[in-house]
Length: 498
Image 1: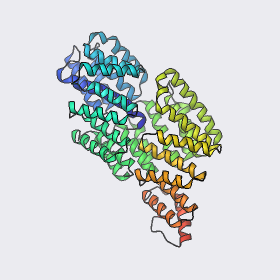
Image 2: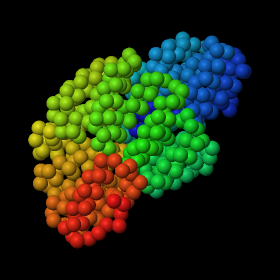
Image 3: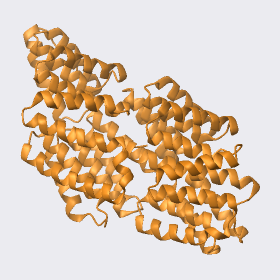
């Protein structure tokens, strides 16, 4: 799952955990056995991340029993995951209006979810603690607490809580999914894959376990193997967007942009929320920036900003952020300043609306990135290097760390700290030995130091990653040009694809 979405999904799984615990003793309050059947079907589908199908089942449950508070609450949370924020708010109000009709246990759960929805994380945590005290042999309170620690990036504590969950319920599949991601964030790839193998064993016919495993393989630079997992996930459930998005990102790294574009065409034809599709466009534009298709990226972002129908302009905010990245890559200081000015305005509005946002580490990193990039383009490399170093230290996601270290290394090299630049890039290759940008930057550094053989070696490794890249893929063309110049100096020939 994409990092931006992961925490929201895991919060949804808190609710799913509750439903499965309640399902066995049928303590969910409803006056309709038929509504209850649709409710359980919705839970099963949501557990598999089949949100559209899940929503239909919950809608049926609510239609059959207008006082079914738990079904209304679950439907509201699924609507949120699908991007239907107005529907989410309206449905959540219905759940709260029916809260007095349910058991004490359900009321406590609804209060906990309301605290989460109401941007009251401390209160939500206190309610989760209360739940574990009242129901110590039930997993749902621990799931909520584990997800809270996940959101705070307290990976080790979240692992402890998920292990406790598995002692209560050894077959709770999503705990293994969580352990996979948590170990991944800690750089423990083998442990991550082992957890996801268990997830696959428990859910062999579900798409998400394959998609999760693919993400870990992608982070390790095992791109073809990752594509195999993403394709398998897509074959199991063609409507799940995560595998398609991850395939697109993988094809982008491999330089196969025609395949990447086909992935986004597939997403554009899927049924679902039009607002979500604007989000896909922003992600496509970001990948175009990475692949140096700057004009295409700019056109997409301008389209999103002009057409975005979302009243909260979430996609517009994402597009503004991507425009800042585009300007930075193009060395466009004026464009960068304009984008960051708009982004700061959006951030201020978000914090005003949701004050707890200001406490998150993600916001601090966003400001650091804006400052670092602006310092770089104004020529203040000392400040840029310092702030990129802080970003590298504070960023927890290994794939994001690789990206930040690459930018940091580029600044270090330009300011003359060659050994430190090489050290940062070697850290990248330790995490992902097939990271093309690290390989090509190390080659450029080697070239500048007159170490032609080393430069050729790094470029050959990058060429191996791009062996099937489109012929017009710009980074490949640039690499081939440099490769030819290096080989001419050393008197060697290349057996790689011209």
